[in-house]
Figure 1 (tube, rainbow, N blue to C red):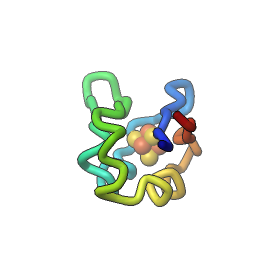
Figure 2: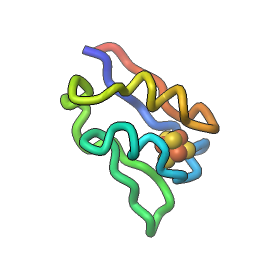
Figure 3: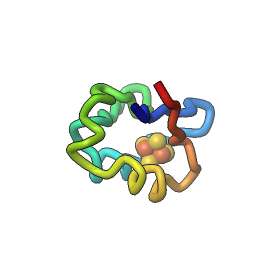
Figure 4: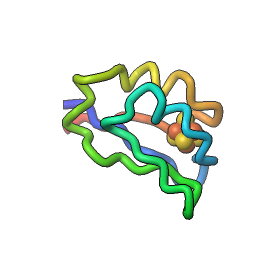
Amino acid sequence: MKKPVIDYDLCIGCGSCVEICPEVFELREEENKVYVIADEKCHTCDCEEAAGVCPVEAISFSEE
Ligand code: SF4
């Protein structure tokens, strides 16, 4: 199964991915970073689209 992976050196905490996949990504404003809270829920949204809107290309996928 494909799992989204965040590159924390790149993520600027813009929240775009959260708008598209709110069940998968969670913005932690105190850190200004996004966390993958439920990668098994990628089927509920379009994580590929979320990766596509990320302005810094911080979202990639690992096969597991
Ligand atoms: S869209 Fe990219 S930069 Fe914005 S919060 Fe998500 S991973 Fe971070």
